[in-house]
Amino acid sequence: MQKKRLNSNRPDRIAAKVQTLVAEILRDNYSDDELVAGVSLVGSVAHGGLQFVRLYYYSRNADTGAVQRRLDEIVRSVRFELAARMNQKYVPDIRFVYDDTLERASRIDELLEKIANE
Figure 1: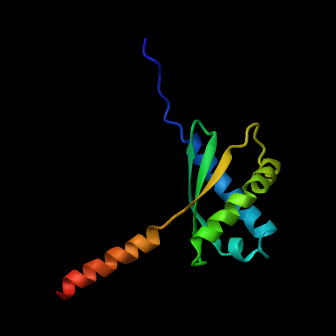
Figure 2: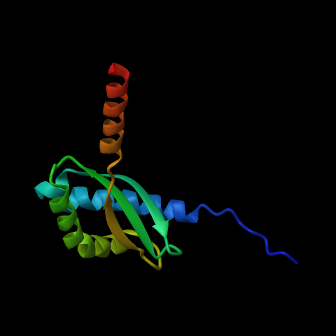
């Protein structure tokens, strides 16, 4: 007998919930921090059987290295606050990843315009 496979969207729901709550935490607790205040969470993906959630962000700050270091510094306190806001037995680890989609799209537009002008 073959085991029935379920198409569960639970990882997507958990990732979206974590993204929403972390955005609220950053807004509520770190609005006075210049590096963190310019961060916008643009996506989330759950990995490892919901053991961790990768949060993709975009920053208005040009120094993305400094922003990443600051986010890495506050990740423990953000996760602690996340545990207080989630009514779930297990709270996944979170990791912040810079999303460079806008820069890549801009570069592609520049290349296409250059080709069109030749």
